[in-house]
Length: 420
Image (cartoon, rainbow, N blue to C red):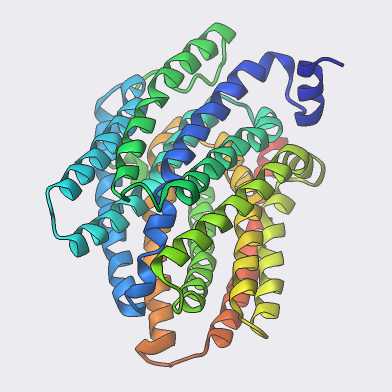
């Protein structure tokens, strides 16, 4: 058995799809590596801020995210898709380079840290949302079930590279230098986009990702969101997901409060390494098989229901290693199973929804959920009720159950539409 035959046997990817899939794998690998060298640095900051201060930063993140998505939708209505997709990555590369320059000029470190935190949080969702908008346009529903799991492992391999760089270099390289590395990395995806467009054109794909223009109405993406029931349900799914992420983020901050910032960076970098190693194994051997054999409802709901159970168990003993272990299971399950399943949903919507409504959901709705949940948690914590961490986790378990039920409904609706 040759290497290509072994690859197609393991991944269930057809030989004719291999080149495009590997290019997409490389594309998302670079994107995630560029972000993951930033994330441990970003996530080490909030443990010094307290619940209310963190809630303020998340509120700023939501406002900036909404503004950014609105500006993006305006340009999406005015320029060709061939320029829109690469333009997003050029813009973010320039923005991080600008923060790098500010860090070298002696700009207020405290304020710059908060700017860095907010903008990195916007970037964290936007660059991957743009990638999946570009990718989902190129595959049919059946093809996406087969290839998205493997493509998504590229994100995990990239995410491993980022934490490794943090672990190996953070003690020797100034933190602001990672901004420069990220800027250069984002420019590297431009030739990959060009090659992918040529590959898809040569193959005669009916789902060519950068063909034509979008609706010239800059508000059409928002209009589709409020008038399309499936898009509204996806929005609610994201909103509930952000809630669970917020509950565990707060738990993580609470258990790490006695650690130094350097120790937090190393712990979080090691956690990311473990998460993405597990994600790769799941993505290669299980994700597409789960989706194709058990259906999208199972793929969208298995992680939420599992998290509900483990949150209840964690509430009995919210020790640092138990919290980090649950983060490991939640993140790897989301990246390997829930995220690809969620992206498959977009193969059943219009081009407008993929390129204009999807970023609204992935970025603005997600960050709006962050704001709602972080203030809710601040209110439940030292803002008013003073609930213990265990009591907060009980509430989180109930939310996870609702999240899982919605996942079942989303999957069933998608499968029913596929049968029509």
